[in-house]
Amino acid sequence: MAVRVRGLIKSYGNVHAVRGVDLTIARGEVFALLGPNGAGKTTTVEILEGYRRRDGGEVEVLGLDPQRQRARLKKRIGIVLQSTGIDSYLTVSETVAMYAGYYPHPRPVGEVLELVGLTEKQDSRVARLSGGQQRRLDVAIALAGDPELLFLDEPTTGFDPSARHEAWQVVENLTSLGKTVLLTTHYMDEAEHLADQVAVIAGGRIVAEGTPATLAGRDTARAIVGYRLPDAVAAPPRFGGAPGSDGLIEFAPDDLTAALHQLTGWAMDHGVALDGLRISRPTLEDVYLRLTGTAPDETDTVPDGTAGERPNGEQR
View 1 (cartoon, rainbow, N blue to C red):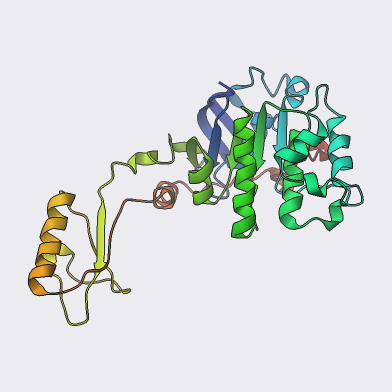
View 2: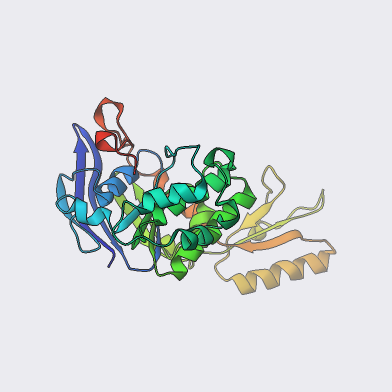
């Protein structure tokens, strides 16, 4: 395991941010930690990184205790924060080379730039990079020390669809190198596309864990049949009855095959079209909203307004 957590607890005064979290992350996999703001996600990740002290529980990251062996751990991990302070007057290659110099066994700068798709921009000033290119540079900096484990915190926030897909390709390149990635994101399609395993945290607890396709039983959930009918044509109650505000009629049959046979047979007998006929199961977003909508309302807040900041002014 790259990460093993048992019974993790962290409180800030009367605020119980993390309430007994258990996690295991295998080496070489992309693990997505999902949760609403205030769920305990940030606190959990910062404890794994070694930037927060836990109140209780066991934590091992790459076989080390991040609270007691932080100096050794820092050489083996890379962190991509939501925002970073990079000297805008350095070139791309100068920036990566500078950070690579902090590590005992860095990866060659040229290889790092190729991995993140910045080879053509290696002589460009950081200030001249687009938002998506700057995010790639953030990943390059995290890769400079050739880490075994990368923490990616909301890596595509604010990206347009094209830039997001380019960033996904970068993450896929990392997994081809055998890197382990812990990803936090609010985009369900991003988690579904990239993650091997997903955990949902709410109210300081892990409320579901599994693959994106099977999380909370979404692969075995009852299918929903949806369709629209022409005006003035009513569907029999057994096929959903009254349409919704958007005109869509939906029902969830016990026997999908039999229901489709009966529905299409009824439509052919009556000479009506089933516009937009579709079959769907709950999406990852549907499951996520259901899981987090019933969680206790807790706030993942550090006293004195320091939530999300690194102690002692550290940025990476």
